[in-house]
Amino acid sequence: MNISAMVFAAGLGTRLYPLTTDKPKALVEYQGYPLIDYVLKKIINSGIDHIVVNVHHFPDLIIQYLKDHPYNAEIEISDERDYLRDTGGGLKFAAKYFKDSEHILLHNVDILSDLDLNQLIDKHIEDKCLATLAVRQRETSRYFLFDEAMNLCGWRNNKSGEEIRSKAADTYVPYAFSGIHIVRRELTDLIPSAEKQSITPIYLELAKKHSIKGFLHNEGHWKDMGKIEDFNS
Image (tube, rainbow, N blue to C red; front, side):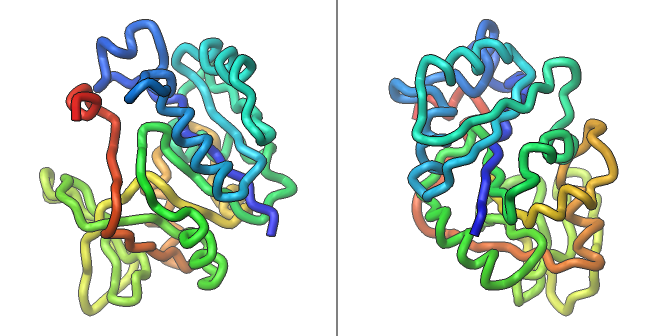
């Protein structure tokens, strides 16, 4: 099974200011190591040896870091310095690097967890679905909605009250997205363009006709390192 990975490292890191005044979020250190180091090692330890990293904010610093700190994997750069494309547009823009891949593991650079990536990958392949999203029960403002079989059925913003339904279900169970997901490579062909767009509405639209599942991981450690206070705990 040919599986590649993509690390979303292009974000501006505005919530981490002033830590991101002179460096990208990916190179902000936590307990002595930059965030990207944790994520790359986790992916490589799962057996994946081809990884694409997208860059935008201080791109040359990330590129130089990867040159100075070789990893046991082929790491390619999807250079978005001209235009920040968000997760959906970023994946489409990087599609050319995945022509030989059957599946693509997607991982935000600011997520630290002990989630077993191989369990996620195995379940995704077993279910033969287009995409599998790691989710858990936690408090947030935005939730993906699933039926009892963990099929993606919609999305809800608790703050604004906005709700999107992709398909009918007897029960809509809310789970928070963990920033880790895996897709079949052909999903990149279904993204209309590499314009700036979140992958969330893409999943919601594709869920109307395709199988998109949630992978529940309530146990263990998970942390979003998106805010200053996250580095002090």
